[in-house]
Length: 139
Ligand SMILES: [Zn+2]
Ligand SMILES: [Zn+2]
Image 1 (cartoon, protein in one colour):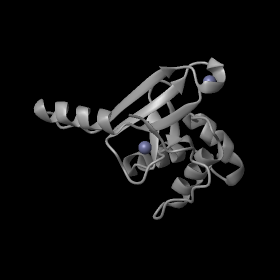
Image 2 (cartoon, protein in one colour):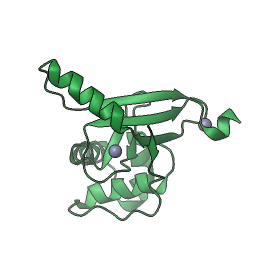
Image 3 (cartoon, helix red, strand yellow):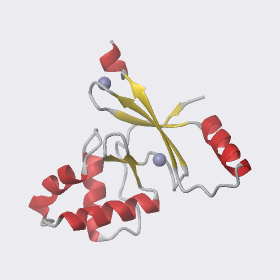
């Protein structure tokens, strides 16, 4: 079962972010599509951020806090649609327009956690990228 949590739309900046983390978070919140690190840097130049490391560090911290996710297949980042960090992340990735939507798939999460526990493996993250065509591109 998949549940759509809608876009990141009118979200307010999470509490406890540093200045640079807030800038990166706002940049991701302003766009609908996933952004690569250099695209974020590009958009932040006018706001005084010029060092790539500043962006990389902020992305790293935001990801560890669970506010954003990395889409490995695109090497790009999106805001998390959910409250708080979660280990299993599921995305619908459109191969035509690069649109990405995060889905909450409770059954998938439970299945993965259970199987991993049975393997005595200590999991950090699981990301599932479901590739295909979004509604607009499939039409
Ligand atoms: Zn998420
Ligand atoms: Zn599409």
